[in-house]
Length: 233
Image 1 (cartoon, one colour):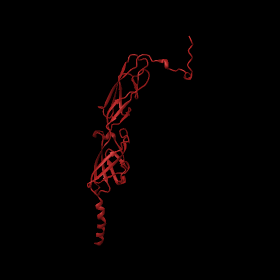
Image 2: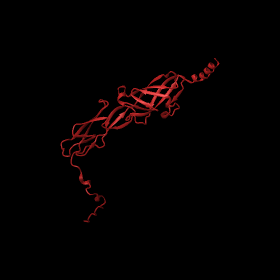
Image 3: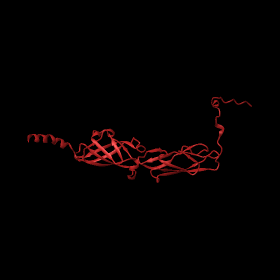
Image 4: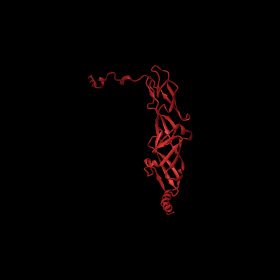
């Protein structure tokens, strides 16, 4: 009996230290470029019923070690505070991922449902490097993506499909033949592969008239040749 009472006395402080969790909030690393990549460090903020707060180590530099936390998700995996997610799987919920968090310090292995909003594309646009296309010269179709985070990143053909009314598309380059003297402008269109409702259109003028060949250097030695003196009249 005495031994049992001593064990209870030792256990009471431990039970007193186990506080009830009121809410868990998840954040992602804004510097990880999660707009383009499917991996990002995350952090958890744990708020207790007594209004005290603890944060995880790593991203949030807190004192709650990740080896005492289990995070599961049907749309990814989390190890040591690094989340790898399936972007296609979270698309239907507007790129919000569901996390199931279990804290080892909390009795009963209670599982907390936590939702983390990840970046998503809101619009795309063309941003041409030059104001017109020259015949026989590749014209790069620069497409930029605008994200809900306010950041803008270039997009390639793995993310957008390109269409052109004239000429030939070679990857992300637009080309019309040198001998084409009819085409005055080309309508181009980009469609986001993840959502065809996100698209952009533009018109690229084709440079008209002959090129000014007076500045073309045919011999590199001409670069070092001093200009001749003008003869006196």
